[in-house]
Length: 398
Ligand SMILES: Cc1cc2nc3c(=O)[nH]c(=O)nc-3n(C[C@H](O)[C@H](O)[C@H](O)COP(=O)(O)OP(=O)(O)OC[C@H]3O[C@@H](n4cnc5c(N)ncnc54)[C@H](O)[C@@H]3O)c2cc1C
Figure (cartoon, rainbow, N blue to C red):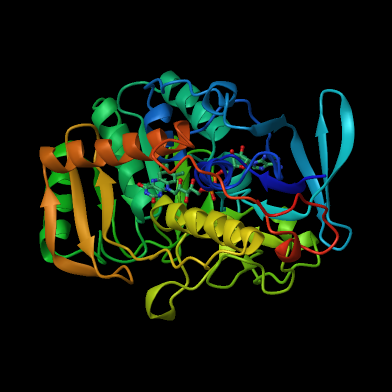
C-alpha cells in the first residue's frame, strides 16, 4: 500500500504543491491525487484581463500533469472530515468519498462582498473566472459614456480600473477607495499611479466608504452617490467556506491556522497553503492572500511533507516579500519594492518597463504551474516506514 496524499484545489498553490511532491517522492511509495472542480488551470491574476475581452491561453491539467505520476480527479469537493481522514467529492458520476493519509488543502478564495447591501444583486466580481466572464459580457453591452465604478483601492481594484479604462476609453471609469489612492506605495509609486490614472481619465473618489450598491450607483458613508451602470467589487477575498465546517482550527474568517511548515496546528495530517492558510510571515505578520507568498508556502508544505515521510531534514523555505507588481493596463505599471514584511521602500520601477516586468512575472507563475516537475532533481526519495503517518502502509526505505 502507498501513502495517500490528496491535494484539494489546483490553483497556483495546490498545483505547485502536487508537482513538487511528485518530484520529491518515489511513485511506488506515494499516491498523489489532485482534486479540482475545473479541468483547466485558471490564471486568477489575469481575471481583469479576461473581463475586458482578452483571451487567456488554455492550460488543461491533463496535459500539465501527464507523465508526472499525479492522478487528477476532476470533482467538486463538498466536505472534509479530518477525524475520519476523508474528503467528500461529487462529479458527473455522483458522490464519492476519498481517503487520505496526508491532506493538502488549497481551495483558495472568492470575492468578499462584506455584506454590503446590494452587492449580491448588482455588483460584479473578478475573483473567479465565471465572475470575470459575466463582467466581460456586461461590459460588452455598455454604450459609450456609461459609467463603470470599481470599488476597492487594493492591488486588484487598481489593476481592474486601469485595465477597463485602457480597453474601453469610451466609458467613464471611476475608482472608489477608502483612503488616498495608493497610499501604501512609495512617493514614486504613488505619483506614477496618479499620473497613469489621470492619463486614462479615471475619476478617483478618495475617502469613499461604499455602504450600498444599486443598479445605477453606489452610495458612500457620507451620503454621496457615485454613478455606476456597472459596479466592480474588489474589496478583498473571502476564504473558501469548507475549512470552517471541519474540526480544523481556523481563524474567524475561516483560514486554516498552520505552523511554519504549513501544517495545521490542530491536525498534523493536514497542511494548508495559499489563500486558505493562516500562516505567519516575516515580523510575525500573517501572510497576505497572494501568489507572492502562496507559492513559497506551497514549496514549504511539499518539502515538509516529503521530509517527514522520508526522514529528511525539515525545510526552511524563506517566505519574504520582495515586490508588489501592479499592472496598469497593458502598457503601464508599477513595481513597488518592499521590505521582507511587505512595506514599501523608496525604490519603484514604473512605466512600460514595469508593465513588461509584471507580464514576465505572470508568465513565470503560470509556467511554474504548467511544468510542475521540471527543474528539480529526478532522484525521488523513498518513504521511511517508521516516519510515515500512523495508519498508512508504506514500502520500506530503500
Ligand atoms: C484579478 C486578480 C489579480 C491578482 N493579482 C495578483 C498579483 O498580481 N500577485 C499576487 O501575488 N496575487 C494576485 N492575486 C491573488 C492570487 O490570485 C491569489 O492569492 C491566488 O490565486 C491564491 O492561490 P490559491 O492556490 O490559494 O487559490 P486559487 O488560485 O483560487 O485556486 C483554488 C483552486 O481550487 C479550486 N476549487 C475551489 N473550490 C473547489 C471545490 N469545492 N472543489 C474542487 N476544487 C475547488 C478552484 O477551481 C481553483 O483551481 C490576484 C487575484 C485576482 C483575483
